[in-house]
Image (cartoon, rainbow, N blue to C red; front, top):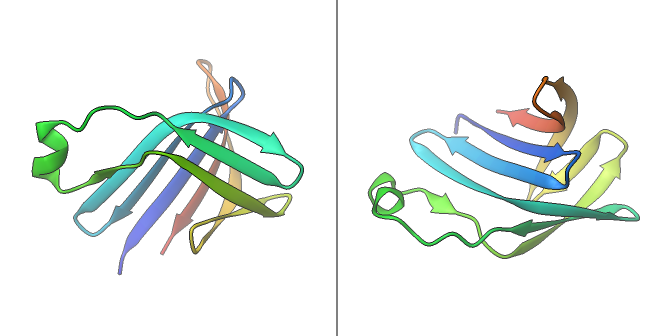
Length: 100
């Protein structure tokens, strides 16, 4: 299966998460919190739209607990993501990305 996952943690405590596998796309956004060696992702709960239903993707909701494995690695579900620094003028974010 060919795809990628991306978790972007911004300094203002917001985040975005997306998964792309073949023709499937799923995403979510919200706020994050760091406690010891765990990141808690609290997803926004937007209403489902007709576009989501037609696209067949999923908008993540609820709360996920993401363990920090090392300084530059986190585990989201069963996927290990490696940190890459991504800086823009609008915002400074730490981005983790995994391509298969």
